Length: 193
Image 1 (cartoon, rainbow, N blue to C red):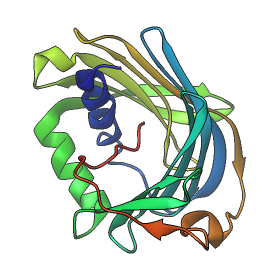
Image 2 (cartoon, rainbow, N blue to C red):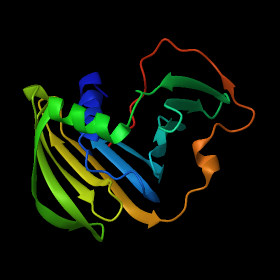
Image 3 (tube, one colour):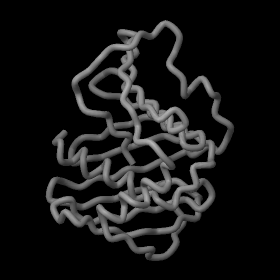
């Protein structure tokens, strides 16, 4: 997967400025970038997110804890994790500020996606090579249900399906017992949207 495709998808995440971050739900997650498809499960509890995605035969687990201002990338096989600091301050305000810097966004109506009434947004990245996109944000859970991006670096489709609105256990957003912290010189992982 090209680095620029990852950047485009990560930037789309910033466009959820209207999200209320109060919902709790789980959903099947699918991301298609060109010929590559990644499937997994996404768990959301307020501002905290856990993604479990199948990557080259193994599970990638990323936990973003906005309440602790940290993101963990877990290696389930080695029982290790890498910690990355999150930006300080109110996440929804940060997202709104970043979104304005990155793209021109307009609300373009409402549609029902996955049995959820959604506000539909269209956006054009200010960096033209990142292209244009559409995002459907559920009015009920305040979260993107579907995102489509068309760009020079490739098309991207991200969808949530089988959404279950229910209380999520706190343990999903914690490092499992027996895991040890390791250092990494890599850049911070992106929770895709």
